[in-house]
Length: 411
Image 1 (cartoon, one colour):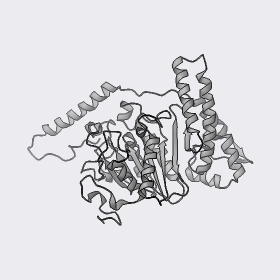
Image 2 (image 1 turned 90 degrees about the horizontal axis):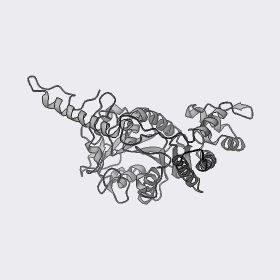
Image 3 (image 1 turned 90 degrees about the vertical axis):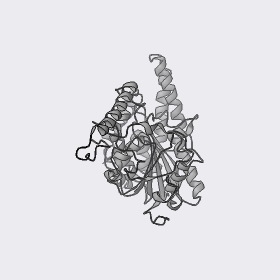
C-alpha cells in the first residue's frame, strides 16, 4: 500500500493527526468519485466474438504444407522465426485463410499484418452489415452494428496500414503512420479510457482520438526533422476502461494492457529506438509495463497521468528516460495521487518527489489538448520522437529535464 505523506514517520511527540487527516480526506475524494461514477465495470457488447473465436479454433489445428503453425499466444521470437522460414506464397495463404489471427500476431512482418487485417476488416464489415439488417435484434443493437460496419469500412480504406484488428467486444486496433520497417525511431501513442474501435478515430474533436493524436505527432515530427525516418503507431491494442468508474480507478485492465504493450514493443522491426507517449489511463498501462519493456524503448512520456502505479521513477525499474507533463487546467490534477487496496495509481508523475523529467505543456488546454498543433507539449513530444533532446522545453524554464542526456546542454 502506497500512502504519500506517510512514508516518513513524524518527529517524536509530534501530533500525527494532520498527516492522517490529509490521507483520510484524499480517500474520501476517491470513494465519493467511485460512488458517483459507479462501482462496477461497464461491459461492452460482444459483437465480433464469434468471428475471432472461430478464427482461433481453426488456427489451433492449422498446418502449412504439413508444418503446424505456432500457437496464437506463442512468444514473439517463435512467431518471427516461423514466418521467416516461409516463402511469399505460404505467408499469403495464411494471411488470407486466417486473417483475424495473422493480423494480430506480434512477430509477423508488418506488411503481411496489413494485408491480413484488410481481409479481417472486410469479413467483420460484412458480418456487422448483416446484423444491422437483422430484425431479430433490438433497434439499439442494429444501430450499433451499423456504426461498427461503417468504422470497419473506414479502416479498410486504401493506403491505411492497420497493424492490429480484433473485433471482439469493443474491439482492439492499431494503425501505423510512416514506414515501420525503415524507421530509425518509432513512437507509440497509448491512449486512455473510452478507447475502442468506434472511438479510435473521430471527425469531431479528432485530436482526442488515437488516430488524431498519432497523425498529429507524425506530422510534427516530419516538420521538426524532415529528413528523419520515423513512424508513429496509434495503439488501441488493449481493452480500456469505460468512463471514470472502478475500472479506471484500479490497475486490472492496465495489467492486461501492459502484457500486450510489452509484446508489441518486443516485435517492432529493426534496430529502431522506441518512445511511448502515454495519455491518461494509458500512462497506467505504461507504468505497469515499464519493468518488462525491451531495451529498445528509450523513452516513456506520460501526459495527464493519474499515476503510474509507482511511488517514483526508481520504482518503475526501467532503463528508459521517464518524462511527464500536465496542463495547469487538467482535471486529473485533482485526482488523489495515492494507492489504497488496489484503488488509485500512486504518486503524481509531475511531482518533484517522483523524479521524472517534467516537460512544458504550454498552450495545451485541459485534459485532452496535449497533441494540439502549436502546443509546447506536442513540440516536446516531436523532439523526443526525433531525438532532438537539446531543444526540449522543460516545465521549469531551465535545462533541468535535459540534464544527463548525451549531446544536450545539460550533459
